[in-house]
Image (cartoon, rainbow, N blue to C red):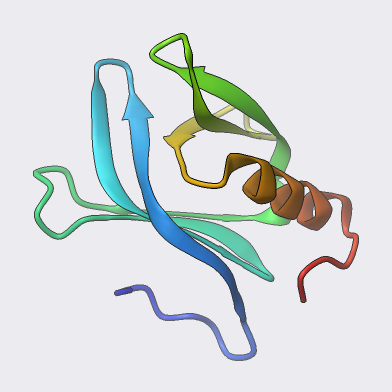
Length: 109
């Protein structure tokens, strides 16, 4: 992980994921902390970057299918109306964790 966590921030989930753009999947790592959701691209990918979203900016998170049929995607919809789609591992666990954080409930802390 190249992203530094803030003082007192705790990592709750970390796994490989793909950021899904219209016709491209960008490889990287998805991290969920007690304060935010972070996606960091792989160093070897042509597109590099970082997405960091605090829970108060997330309107909702929902499950989506990738390639229209594969049940391994999630979509973060922000209050700004921006959307980020990811192909992930352990989708159900990840959805529950992020939803608890959005709603302010204690979970997996």
